[in-house]
Image (cartoon, rainbow, N blue to C red; front, top):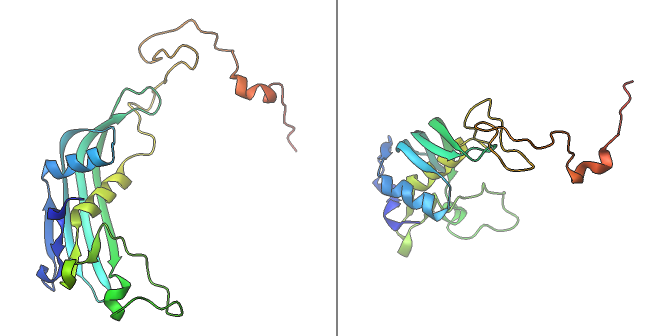
Length: 190
């Protein structure tokens, strides 16, 4: 993760600060790092309000932009417009709160996302990474099964033809051999 994305928490005013992540090279580096088959059509932007709290940091923001992903049914282009609002509380690392490692008998602590909040190098307080949080929220905003259209017919399971653009002459009644054991199964209604 790029070191330049980290911000010293002590540089954030008590009443908070708003950060905008619109540098497309930051987004491109995440897309490359995570090898996401995604093409940016309209610039990705995250606007995040950073609000320091007693036990952590509250992030409120929005991720917006337009991307193109492979359609889950036909592998064509699925256009996805993002306008995702989020609230995320990230707790401070336990050793920061208690001055040392948490003892096993101590209260369980919330898990710290070290991609977003960390102890600064050489003990200089805490650093936060709003770009990493923006990436996480971007990832959560993407559809699980992107579609090029609601009525996408997908690919023919026999010949692989795109059913949206061409008709194939494959036997539509041909059963998937993995389902052969279920052929002829009937269920009785009670």
